[in-house]
Amino acid sequence: MGALTRTVGINPLHRHQLIQQTTAEVERLAQRNTQATNRLRQIEAALDTVPRGDIQEAYTTVLDTQQRLFTMRGQLEKLQSDQRHLTRHLDLLRSTLEITNHAGYETTISEKEESAQSLLVRIIEAQERERLRLSQQMHDGPAQALTNLILQAEICGRLFDIDAERARAELANLKSAVAATFQVVKGLILNLRPMMLDDLGLVPTLRRYVDSFSDNSGVNTNLVTTGKERRLESHKEVTVFRLVQELLNNAVEYGNASNVQINLDIGESLVRVAVEDNGSGFELTDMLNSSDADRLGLATMRERVEMLGGQIHFDSSIGRGTKVGFELPIS
Image (tube, rainbow, N blue to C red):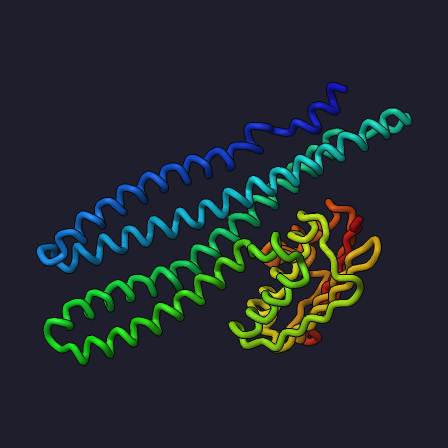
């Protein structure tokens, strides 16, 4: 039983270290956000006497801090969720080892440790890639847009005392800019964690996401659902949604696809998904054996599906697009 305990309790310090560091960073950013917000309120109370450069710097500091806090909180939630999934996987591994040991089979503990550690490393790497992507989207989108909104609002306030007609025109522009920024933020929230997934389930959330993806990317994206539309286990709904999300992003970012077809079938005991694009494709054997597989997240996709007792298949070649199909057992 000692060897079994070592398998289940792999490097507990390493496993929890990232969560602890992220929690500490969230707390630090929350405190910094409070300080920056208080400073901004002081400036707003004496707006006429504060130099414009100081005003802009204060607003930028608040926006930057809130952006980082938003991103880190999202990552902390994802880390905690993945940790729970990993714990369930290790519990299953322990049960399997107990059965095989009882039956007299020999299990190489070091290989199990290496496999579980490799999975954890891949999960962390995937989280870091997602964190970087989200941070870039926040910086290029809402952060810059909000800075411009603040400056436009300041201009409007000063124009009212000089040229009321021009001020009204600027307010109309400001309103349009606010509406556009709001849509961008809604899109980021949908990418981070769709609230619809918890409230309405997988199929309605995928429909909305596919429509939004098609509008934003310009890629003709079609979703066809068959079988009985019903709620699945929460972690399996999340897994299916994330895999479809990653495959759509890959089709556009790496495959330059113009059309993507998604088929979702919910059966009695299996949920099956197929995602096919008309992108540039890749040489499958070379890709799966190279570092590019990590860049596209293919290895992580396979491990996530297999961890839940499912199967995933990749079919691609240069110039013929890519088709990915996977299935998960459901109750």
